[in-house]
Image (cartoon, rainbow, N blue to C red; front, top):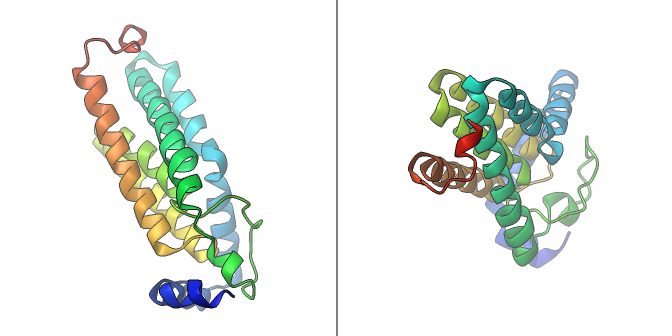
Length: 185
């Protein structure tokens, strides 16, 4: 463990260590699966592609894909590589990981960002299904803490950035007369 890193993040490590105390064989299996469903946004990309099939849901599917690309560029492309925050599992390697040790930086959480940008986009198009999607996005975000691969602020900022990007993208889709996707739905 790197001393300076640990001292500035005591409260975050306290939360992560307390989550290590709730591990059990059933929850471990669930959190592994949930976390893997968020890998590379594949669950959300798959869902967006399904939404593209029906004209009734096509706008939401297109909007999700656009928002996810924006989130990828801003979150994983710009912020993550500018901040270069180490992951908790890199700082304290004494905690046994249940999932593969990620190779990219920690801030913001891409799983949280991608999940929330997708879920809020769904919510802005359909409240009922959106609430279910938000609950699932929050579960994925929690799995990243449970699995000791993100700090709480990584997850929180990923969630907040996802909400902001989804709202801005939604406003663009509602208001822009130059929206190149409008003719597709």
